[in-house]
Length: 154
Image (tube, rainbow, N blue to C red; front, side, top):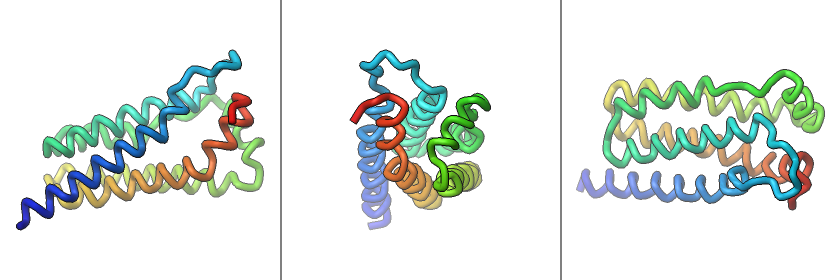
């Protein structure tokens, strides 16, 4: 029974990860308008790859790999200052909301590293779900307006 419950959680994590990949597809697509991609897009692409590695590691119960990759998410690179200013100017009064989403992501990734280091599979799954929910909340709030504003795509 315990293994069946664990298998259901693995399935749920995998399903959410597949959803995350589907959400990331617009970020991976080349910009048809010829506009140079923001560094932020490249950062998001790398974060997406890291999330996929973690999903795969979870499915193999490779807690060492999860603990290794989680800090890469927690301490992901920041865009150059000029680009950061452009993004914050566009976001305007929602800047604190954007930064809050980013902080939630950092905290969840740090927690993920800690539970993975303890080989706590159930904890890893729970914290990874929190991490994915943080990513999804930010994407739902900001992805579409970003893509429309910075790339002219709808």
